[in-house]
Length: 189
Image 1 (cartoon, one colour):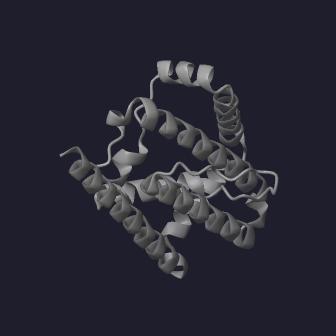
Image 2 (cartoon, rainbow, N blue to C red):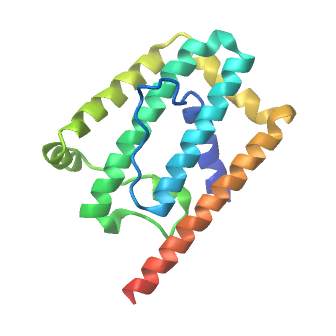
């Protein structure tokens, strides 16, 4: 549970600023993996909720919230491409039996990027987009203010139910992951 709370905090700070704000943004493709797809859907929905909350309560942070959203969405798409590659070529590196934080922390090496780039040229474009957006976010004068506001939200009694609900949904994704791990283990026996 402690690792799940750490993941929650990381998602809170990293995600808030991500919502499909722009109609031209393509949704993140489904992978066919129930646990991964549930996690990405939850992460996207949570980010959208936080983004909407920032726009409602702190309109002066709209610029950084929008930019950060684009970055987080680009990161989620990049992670999904990496996950698909690992599932196909290095499935043994995907940690399903050590909890959600281990599952979503992909073991990735530069040579994987090189191989994936050769197989799918769009991977490099996505990698560059995520890197460039991250730099812009980190250099933005309001980035620290957004992070501070998100930390305040987490401690706010007025928003406690929202955070409790999110943790409940994370636990539901954890259950999907545990079931998938158990099913895979039975299939190998």
